[in-house]
Image (tube, rainbow, N blue to C red; front, top):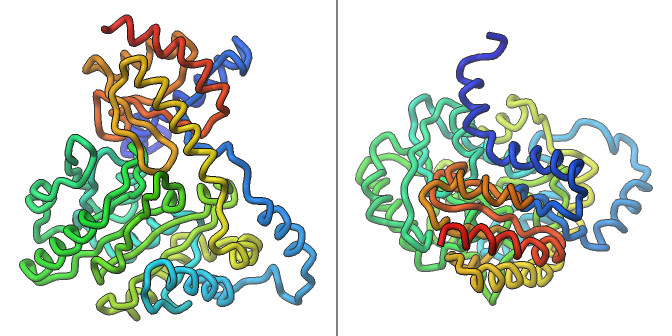
Length: 393
């Protein structure tokens, strides 16, 4: 065997999203792109803000000695200061540039945080459904993923969460707005989670850390605002990126923000800066750091995604699909009318509609629909969605 047995197993676990994406490529060649309705991948189709394009040119023209050289592993101080200033306003905390570590996207941020925090065998509690990569990130650093069911509406189940926390628990990892459900945990939930973690930390005589993965935090609808974990719990960390908020996932730029009230903040920060280097990232891309430093608070046109959400929800609701309307991100997670979500996805694929089975996210009996697509894709897919639903009703 050319590869390790573990990675061989991981390939089968992680295949659903990529499999559907690759099937889409094949079907588009066979039937033509306009006749294939690909909802498989959360790849933003709303362009970056105009200011981003302007800054690319401006920053490229800067002529400063050593501008492309090595830097501190945590990133450029000017950029970290700009991020900290923005977060101070958003979270009402006294954050400084020293509490910010620039990373290679949110994936890089999560790996850096977990590398710093986990000893072998430490448990990371993850509410389901969840972003499929989380289990791999935890395993990267010797941890053990512990999945906890959420309520019917995908809100946090605190009885289940409380029962799951043991002396082995080191991290609670949440994602809000959530991929794949679009669920935004409300302020009461976040406050209750903070209270639970305070209680459990005292009970077990150890620090339990809350990591909030927030790449969709600015893509929210209907007046919803993502609550601050910093306000709810002192041992909290935010991992995020600009991939979705600015539609630049290929640029791999994000950051870690550490709650300034966290216990042992100095050693935690030092550990994460070190891990940013020794995992192999070294530092976040210099060019993107200089651009991002001047882009705080600027996002894509969120109303465009809201229109797509409403278009999809209205169409599928009329056809009899059942779902929780997402408060953020750009995913819908409807129930399937049969228990076998893979079979349902296969039937949709026969109509050239590509979705992902919910079991790929730890929740069978659902499908994920990424609606970051052209409006015409949503509209023209409705006939096929209807035909498949009729088959099972």
